[in-house]
Amino acid sequence: MRDEPYVVYLYNLAHELGCGLRLEPNLAGMMYVEFGYVEGPTPYKSDQYTDQQAFAVGLHELGHFYHGHTQGRPPFGDRKYYFDNGVLKSEAEAWDYALVHLDEYGEELEPDTKRFMWHTCLGSYFRGSQQAAGKPDRLWNGNRHHVEFIWDKPGTLFDTTRDRMQSLAA
Image (cartoon, rainbow, N blue to C red):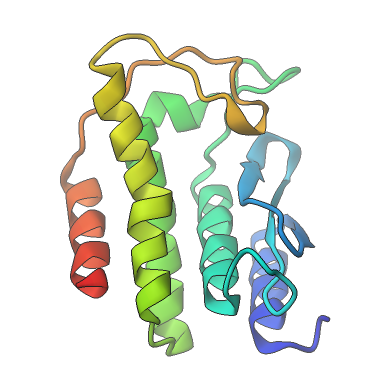
């Protein structure tokens, strides 16, 4: 498994960051920065994600680690930078990181990957922020429900990242 190019790239990048990396064929991406690792789907092994989508998710999760997006899971309740920074901003930072690495890798994104990055990933957070309409909220996947937060407004980085994804998905 480790000799496949996307997998090698992900493990090498994780090593450079000092980040543990757990890949499983159909695992949804999630970061556990306060515990020192991230996880995601294994490129070349998933029946739920294309190889390129799995690669992009892995890069995105490593972007969370790179930016120090801790989420206040016990026993680290005081480490909640992801929420203090703003969920939309944190997601945009991690997707920007992934897009930069996809560019550096020389990856030409497939139409399904372009749509996936916006509609399934970053766009889902935007829709969640719109539904919450300024009321306290929690994220229930990935054991992140410990921190109540108010959604931030999309800022310049979010808008730029969204626009890059949507122009890619056109």
